[in-house]
Length: 511
Image (cartoon, rainbow, N blue to C red; front, side, top):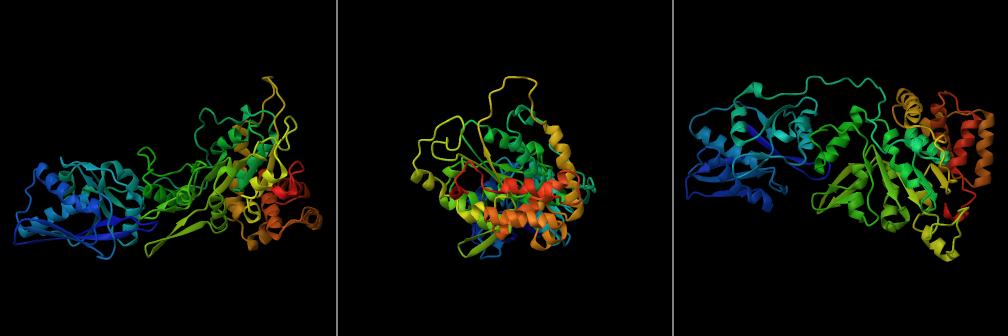
């Protein structure tokens, strides 16, 4: 029997072979293989756990080898595999013969012998399955998370004794029996308090823009005075975002597992992530980093939404870093001679004031900012970054109304239209309209002669770049899908151009 564990690094990580040798000499425990402090300390926890679990610790000199030798091993997840390896070696010295098979073992040990949960179990089991290792022993709290990996046979150990007992019981390992088929249905998360769009009054255009963004995965920026309701409307966005498909959920679950964010009640992340980093977030916090290249906010928002509230308050370097991941859908990190690549296919939503005081362009308030201060305020947003935003909307203060009869569109109504649009996209090309390639735009975003003329006039009038023209076509495709139309009409193009063009209330140099 060959015992493996897992060393997390970046998105991929690596399997680690745990070998134990018992030899004559002064009783001691040596660990070799570039182990960090937490792994070296495992020898003390392992010895106490073995004795307190009712086993006898070998009186010989114990050598523990973690290979590959040039890979740094970190974390407390090596406690259980080392303990299992020591007891296995002791049993082999007594004549016990184990089957020739490979097994993945992960878990942290308490001094009493109980097993604690660890991070990265989903990623570890996925890596093991890719290398032909099906049987896995993991902490009981991580068992459901591990069983979500197709093909895995998992045993959830609550203590060291049960882990050793499972080695000799073939039926102790359980896998997910088939699971529910992914029939392509479009579902939404269960409605909760505070996610009703009918509560938003006087901001029909903003709600319409968010509906288009949710249906097609388009990036959006909302510019408006403080108190106009842009942040409140965007924070309700998860209610109209469809649940992830199984393929999307697997990659998100792997990233969240590496970050230690998996909840026992949700072993497979089906709800699209909705990340709201603080304005003080560092470059490493956003794109990822650290010794193990942990995922950053843009990777934690993979297949979901990254919402930057008060976006102008973020560091310029952080905002400019978003350009490449928005285009490529991934982020590459390099640390200490090693590199990794995280998926970062996220949807960017931004809420920003039009000027430092927030009153520029408002019909109800007066802006006292100088032209220079407004210019410096908006220089944080480079033209290449804003050019990747499909939907731009200026949100003015709504007219005060206390009438109960005046209500906006409900969340349920928005979900019905978005469901139709998402089904059409999955059936047609399998990806969201915002991610259509130039070739797919030619195939799926065809327009008649009147539509082409409309685009030519808009390009000349609003100085649209080629990327802006493609953006209008993708947005128009989403608007047509919301209307249940297979063809893109001039009406759909007009609305797409209206959301893309420069707002009349904002100076041209701001966007």
